[in-house]
Length: 389
Image 1 (cartoon, rainbow, N blue to C red):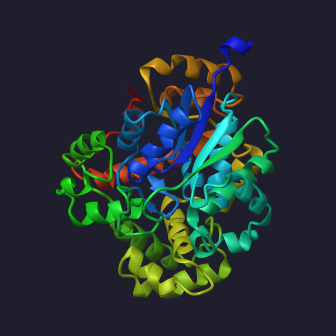
Image 2: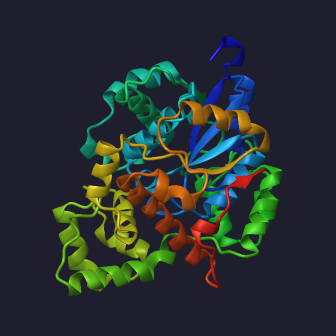
Image 3: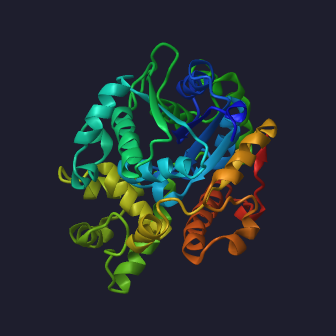
């Protein structure tokens, strides 16, 4: 590629659960602060790192991102989107690396200091400590930033330069807004408690998002962890009836498997069961992810396949892109070394069997999600078009 054609391409890793002013601030910084020609978002699909369904399905969140400045949204496979901070970061960073053209990774952090985060990335706790969840031992955006830097080092990739901007307003888990910036946690609480009162959010989400959310809730319901209670109860009862254990499920070890099975008769709701299982040795979020992996049938063998055999990136799957981002798509198709899934129906022809099995996890997760969000009927994932805006 000649110097005249080199484009500055910035990657952002996100959940947008839901999209708010802090996300808009980061996208604006990519354009105005870093001078990015294109912005790629690697976004969680319909289930997120907290071990629960996203409040709003992935295509509506893709529309939100494209409306506010993103050029391309790639789906982070559900194996990674529901993983610990380490797996989440490695899966997302690998996705950006395999675009073959991303040169910057931008993220928000509580410190806003890339040099300090880079130094501290060498001192991230062990895998066991990670298991207790990022928020239990540090500020969550700081630790995710360190995990992103650590992931770049893990893949020995020096083509992508990490950059951070100081997080504005409310803290990650704060329920109260600050300076026009509310946390995603606070916004989710408002939407779940008063789904018809979007005026309460008008100062905390970009104006374009009101219409997107209104359109979504006209045909769907917001989902939370307890909407999965009946499914989880059924699977657990079937497990104990067949005298099986759960040790083959990702994030479940023998002691946790025994504890889950022992307490099945006490099951009331998804979150109530987490409360029953939680202890000072294991965090809420780890248990929530483990239970979600039971529902989604994500096994340790699946994770071994995608990390060892597929180098953390089995494919690139676009959820949506801007009409004027054709140059970006061409660059990715030219420089990427993994399949680019333009049409889901073609996946059997372009993916290896291991990669196809990972994709099937994504398809199942999305169709399960849609069946709960749209109980009157849902559209198959194979019929969901890529969003072009």
